[in-house]
Image (cartoon, rainbow, N blue to C red; front, side, top):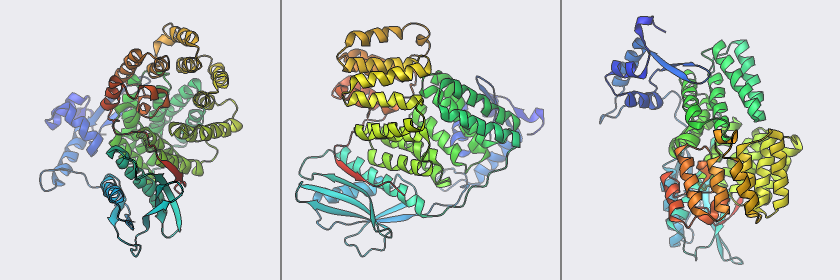
Length: 530
């Protein structure tokens, strides 16, 4: 860092030095690597910069301007390998041609693959999309076939005779591409990113933090945050410490233990700092992607960061795990399951990944599969709170209300009381035909200590189950204004299925940019992408 008189101590000073608006220089930091430094405190972070570093960055930026006025920084890692897929059209049916066209369009949004149409199987492409007719069911099966491995990595059965909306066809094409990308990214060896060795004490603090972070309780998450702050203070250049800070603030916000509007800007700052320190660190890109997903609701930006993370380290389990969240939230359930199963293959004893494999199945309405995953997690740790919580939700969807309420009671006992668990339990009472108990629990949430951080999203789901669509939309709007971290699931959450024909509900979904993520109605046969 330069001398003190060279230091710029606020966004306003940094913007003034570059003769730009504050909003512009903040965008440059996120998108073009403007060198911003941060002090991390217990509740907030402060920014500062070196005038010399800023001027040097501006000079490099000007030198790298591209024709037409667009400015980009030179890439910090090699261009990714491009796999190719040939799309076969043996029957040349109009619906197949239309789907193949959509496949091409969807492929342009992804990294690392090139898609081309082929009329036969003589192409030397690495993957083929094949069509099969099932005479018994009257369905057509689209199958994604890996040529070298001689195996289908994805298939989907649907009826060409039934009218299908454009959104469903687009979604099908996007899922094909996601499954292809997840498979192709593993086929090419990539050198590990060089990471600066941290101070020994900082490294120890970081791994202690991850131990507590994986336990997921509120007490443990606060312990984790303390460890990560200690690691960052011990070695300010240790990028992983900042990813730990970001990931912990994300979980605290997701489980409604802290306010997202207070915690998530700090999480974003920490993730960006980690990327600045180690541009090819998978953990850093995963952390930023999750901020984009849960708090910013920038779906495409989240997808780019998740894919960048996986490209940086195809063996980083959390990258696939959290990428599955995005895919499931946008209705790409086949690809989501392939991603989370890849994460589970990398880390087969991870409790959180096993649970999220269940959540991914749950969102696809595969409740028996969801229960199976939750049972596996509970076999490893009978007191894992998150497994009991999601097990209860799957059981209620299966109509097993007594068992669902018992699972909620277990989770509440283990936490010592939780606002979001109370709201979820109210939903089970509503489904079970006990509106009085549901409303009593909702009333408890209006009183301290629950009233401090309201589980608005889960309260909305309970009102939907009670048949009060007006209050359900009211609480969804409140969740949106609070930046509730669960709202990204609203277009797929089965608890809101009764609301999907309501104009006000559709407006909320559209405002989030999720209007095109309709629930797939086809039948899927899937192999994990490995």
